[in-house]
Length: 396
Picture 1 (cartoon, rainbow, N blue to C red):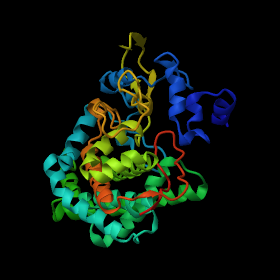
Picture 2: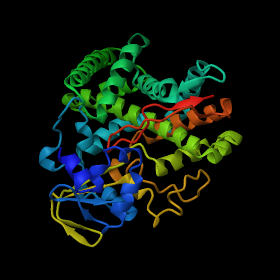
Picture 3: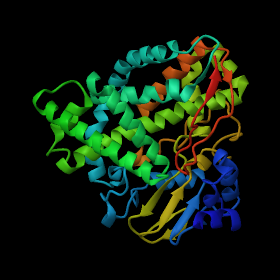
């Protein structure tokens, strides 16, 4: 009710983002925020909002700003335990060191043939000239199968892993009913039981996978209590970002047919499409940081405990940082400084894998279906934080 009042009556841009029809295009609301001072009061006390690229970058890079006040770090709430995202150094550094080896350039090169083979397998199921939903056919199943392989989930458990992992990811849009809450909680518990069993197996039967890496760090790099939340975080973060990156990229290409033709004529532009999508329509639209101590940002004093909401989707269209920022242009040369994967110590450790999956998916799609086009209405997710399509109907 408070959101409805703030958005529809008081017409506050941040409150309106999750309301119809603005969740379809929040970028117009970001421009309303841009017309205000670069650090404007937020909806709640001690909260400030910015869409300015320079300010967002400074906040995200600064070690004076953390994801959670020190006294609240590690608390888990809700059906999905993403509490490890809230860690500040030194705990954040310790956890990141454990996960980072799974995303090295050598590992990425080894994953690529498997990813490409899987993309072809998914597209083989699409009838020639037929209509299909990209999210159900490719964008949804690909990332969760890749993260399943990366973790080392056995084939016998893969269907269960995919089912519960998908249910958990959908809960990020918010719990909509008591039944939905029971489903999400059941998925969480089932995945925890699976991870607990697989981690125990890896302690006696190590393999070349991420679960073995994690099991080897138990009690050393990772505390026992952190093990299951870390597995859950790797699943949800690795799945959700890539699903929406692929979906958003193809959606924008369909809305900009001249750009799709460029890719269809030269599929090697797939990596450029990925970067422009990350700038123009990023999967994660905003994040927030709290002052860990008194400090200054953009010439203003902020006491410890103040919050700044960094609107990444707005910062990525800042005309001070990007030429013609509202134009989707896969040939642009000034787009690499986007903040889609955050910045500083909290830069997304899985960014190389998300980029690789999206690049391979787009390249193969352009090679195999050069006449691809939209085949119906595209419903959007309603989350303020996550930007993505629910369905993407296409005709091959």
